[in-house]
Image 1 (cartoon, rainbow, N blue to C red):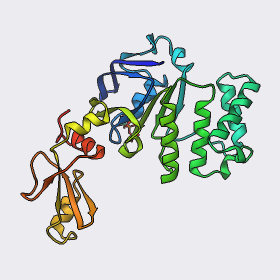
Image 2: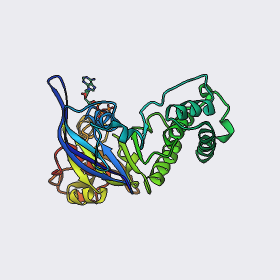
Image 3: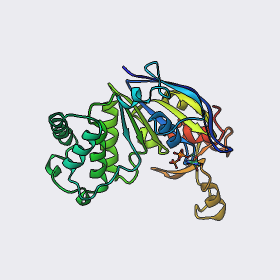
Length: 295
Ligand SMILES: Nc1ncnc2c1ncn2[C@@H]1O[C@H](COP(=O)(O)OP(=O)(O)OP(=O)(O)O)[C@@H](O)[C@H]1O
């Protein structure tokens, strides 16, 4: 069981405050999704949690031990999956894993055993001796995951790991992280709601330097009940008025058996004929970011 306690954490670059006074309690068992728009500070927060960067103020405790005073306490239990897996085109998958295992201080026989078993569970055994330059983006990402999991880290932190993956590879990665989250602390940062929908037990929403929301996805959806509406498109949907309306982030199109309808996040019914509908997580999240749903 691992616990991460984020206490009054603040980060500024010069005069620019990225976030301030962040507090959160994270535990193993159930994936934790860190959501926020581009530039919200997710990577900066992950860099602090992975000891790559020092915060301006505040503290992070790893099972009660200060990460700032004892970064090794975190480094010993951490598996970090960065946005872009380091790329060594001329190494084979096995050679790359060996190299990472060496950096993690693993003994050669232990490195070999674990690399083989990880390559097998990530369906890469057949390609263990192929050079990484011959791998697809998704395969390379899976090698990155194998490298992250070497030495069985108890905390896994992933930064937008599905960038560049095709839909099938995204699902595979999602399932793998969900499975790991049963007995590891898994924190997955993304700006794509579908990456964590259905697998996150807890979500943190970071925007404008604060956590706008911390809790279960279900609770966020509950909060947005009554704020999402659906209505048929009354005019030609290529007309400038409709196109302008659809360009707002709070509206989307949905195909129904009787035609295309507009879904809109709004405190009040946008049209008299609009019907209140059950929100999905994406809508609840967007409503929160746009201030329609209260944080
Ligand atoms: N070394 C730095 N010096 C100055 N500003 C920085 C530095 N690193 C990041 N920033 C700024 O901090 C803000 C947050 O960046 P960060 O990469 O943490 O966001 P993010 O939520 O991870 O975004 P993305 O999803 O686009 O990766 C951005 O405005 C960025 O320009």
